[in-house]
Amino acid sequence: MKIFVRERMRSEEGTKKPRFRVVGVQGGDLKIYAKRIRKCELVELAKHTGAEIVYITRDGEGSEGKHAAA
Image (tube, rainbow, N blue to C red; front, side, top):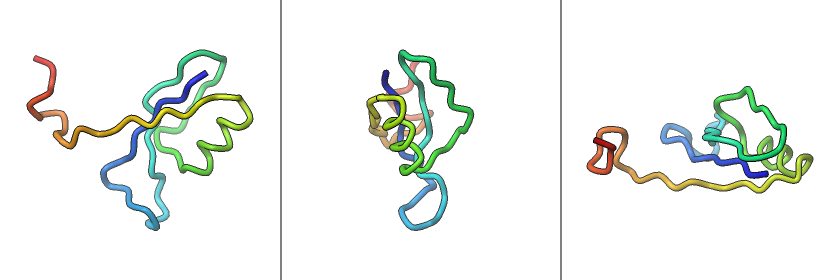
């Protein structure tokens, strides 16, 4: 099982806001209802389900960037 997450733009370390956004889950029978999640919560989920956490990097362009699908 894999949990795909990316770091949020508006979240910085130490701001006490959830820093990651769940993008998707592959395999298993896990349902995540939170849109944003803290790293400690993410690690705890992965530990109990045996899932691997996949961190997706941001391109820095946003939805209107040059790499957006046509």
